[in-house]
Length: 347
Image (tube, rainbow, N blue to C red):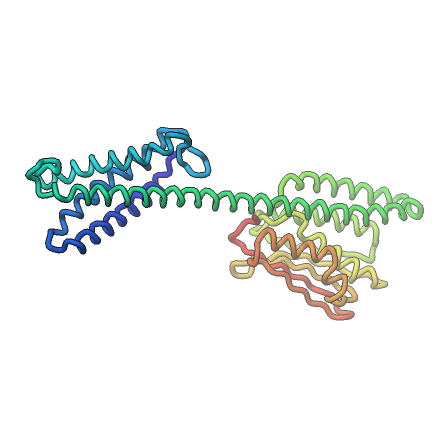
């Protein structure tokens, strides 16, 4: 198991704090004695016990979830560490004061029973604390990993739901064109092949560059131009400095599809769709606007399948750091804005 030295340092400092607390309690019980006596022995015994147990456990095969040896080694290690730590710490304290705690004439001789009892109790408590702490940290990591995998799986599921939605609409229109306008049907089929090829490449990741998102959107809009002819024009505005930012795949297409279906198709003369990306402070703003008939935001256009997918994808990828706003007026078109954090990649 790889040793995390930063965690070791944190555990060592916690052990020192524990030793200081024990020495303070001993001094409070026997204030007539110098504070140096319990302080030196407490730090010596605590440091030796910590080193033997926390460093010694890496000499054995440990369970991943606890970082603690299994079987007999897991039981004997704290016992050996506490006994060995007491002996080594006491020897270090004896060296500091220039006596032997095991000598019949030593000052500390009368303190041996108390010292042994305190060491045993403190060793058990500290060992259980660090054991529980290590296990809790492992479980926290597992929960974070599970949350990340669940988010990725959810994004993939949303993509698989969204792709057939667009594909079935396109095939239905293609079926009509085959009988009425074979040449336009051929052009539409070519565009659809290009779109599906780009979609297949993007499906290997839950996110891609904003440039790739706009490229796929262009393929989709070309499909719609074949279907609607001169009734549809579009504009894509992507500043070069924003092109490399990563966003969830298939993020903008449902918004454009909404604009076409609910805004432009009901309008006899058609209209235009504009998609732009811009920076606003620490946020990336993606805007989809149209010159269509406008729509009721409480109806299918504002809360239907496409918008529901967009909101759910943003919530899954960014949590509450992203937002969606819509504006629409009858006869004056509609505008949908997505605001994403610039400094955070999608989860």
